[in-house]
Structures are given as C-alpha cells and as structure tokens.
Image (cartoon, rainbow, N blue to C red; front, side, top):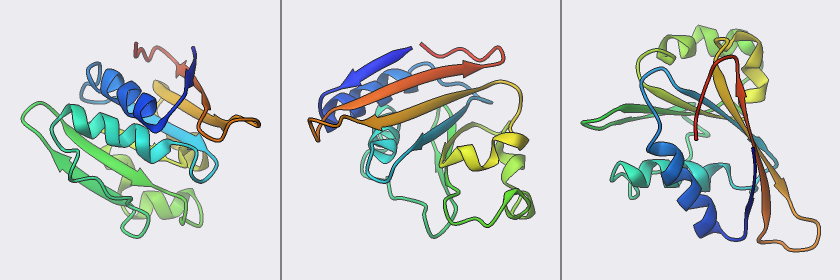
Length: 145
C-alpha cells in the first residue's frame, strides 16, 4: 500500500488510523531517513490512546513503554545499537508478544523479527519538503488497514 502524506498532521492522522487496528503482538518496523516522519507516525499512534503528551524519542533509552487500558505499546529506537545481539541482550525480543511494538530503524533487526510484521517505509519528496511517500508492507500474514 502506498500513501502520500502532505504534512506532519497527515502523518499523525495515519498513525491514529493505524492505532485503531493494533492488537497485542503487532510489530511495526519504521524505516526511513532522519526526520522523515517515523516519530510523527508514532505520535499519531500514541495520540489515539490519549498519550500524545507522553511521546519522546527513545534514542537514549532504546525503549519507551506506554501502558493503556486497551493495549501496552513499546516504542523502540534501535539506531544506536551495535548489532542484533545487543537487542537480544537487553531482552528486546521478549516484548514482541506483550503488546504492540513500534521499532524505529527496525530494518537493523529484521532477521530476528517474527514472520508476521508490518514494515512502514518513509521517503522524502525531492521537490516538496513537507511531502512524504509512505509504503506499508505486511510481511507474512500480518494485516493492518
């Protein structure tokens, strides 16, 4: 599926729409250049659960945990990890079935992900700095929208 986001608000609204479909065990890998929209999409997901004021990039903590009455959400940023072994050493894979996992820079650990996950890739538009081309790929039997 391909989507064009014309603004940060579009990306946040897409995150809210995605959030409405999340369930325990959903894994979303977010990939794209710095500043391409990964955190804005996550902001939309958290907004759906009333957590819009809670978001912060987990760049220095690896994972932020958010608990809601509906679903636990685990927001990872694996950009600073050396390799997959470091992710496993912190018990990152133990989160996969505890709630919904959102993994920024998740392409770095794709080899250890379960068969079913959603990959969302962000591309900047070469002509308009506000436009993002977003591709959503459902791996295995994962479903989203």
